[in-house]
Length: 298
Ligand SMILES: [Zn+2]
Image (cartoon, rainbow, N blue to C red):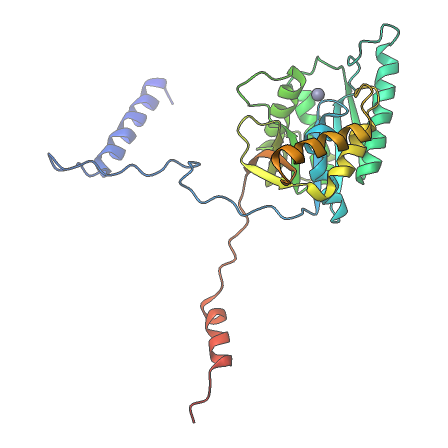
């Protein structure tokens, strides 16, 4: 088809669309605009229960512990299978003049594995990207897609790579890569066809929780798992200075004394791709209990 012919078809299609729209009578008030899809006027998705499985994909060892490990501890305690993926091994995170990148990466991987054992995480996978130099590219996205197709998690947790305020480059790139992997790549089999050739089928992730969000809209109460979170944070000895368990407990006690006993929460931006079908009762199911409890009139 020539370019001009194609252009002609588009303009006639536009004309048809315009013709179907009724024109308001002169002087009539304009009808109220329908809320745009995704606007606050739409009904929100139901709360997340404990998923069967979740994959946590973060940039550095210790990211997950500070941001979302209360939720991980809760879900693991409630029977979920949780897997960790660390894109880098945090090989730049030191001020020690004697430290090398190799030594630091090995130390931080060991710390992360220890934290995973405390939380009950099933497996901890390191992709080995250099700290500070992650790129949102086809390779990283492909690795994330492959892991999602292999482990098939119900929920994914990662960094919010879209927040407008200052963000660490690795956090931003990992967050964006993971979201691009989740939608639509992992779902559609023709992306990264080598996975299918290797027996890994496409997979749909319906729920994503983004940590470190500037505008969180989803909260998990982790009060009952807060001490497990602290124990997991304390595994990252190369990163926490001289802080001890007692320091965290004291800090919490001081906060309670100041503000009162409030739940300890982790906050996320929630992204639901396909809402679960609504469980509307069928008409006969609604009618049945009334019939069963009706008092005989004779
Ligand atoms: Zn980090």
